[in-house]
Length: 82
Image (cartoon, rainbow, N blue to C red; front, side):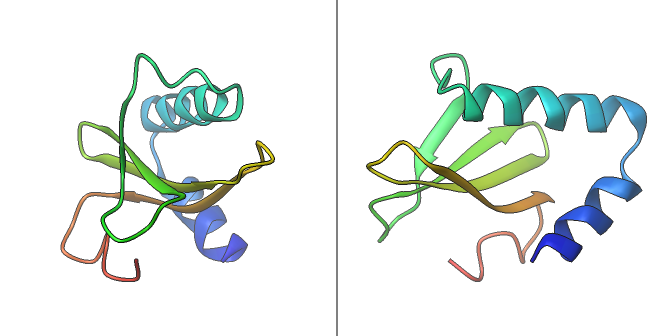
């Protein structure tokens, strides 16, 4: 999974990388008020953040731990594994 995320990040333009970085910091710092965050249907602790064509799917545990599950651009495959 980490290799897939690393490859994706390496393909991004500088502007897109900075946007992802900003979104990931907001998620990590639990600053979700200004983000388009919704829970995925059928899952109680998996959420998605949407910013234009960018999607970040993450899991937030009751302990406060955040696990990034997927970083991607929106396409037909984005939500298939969830």
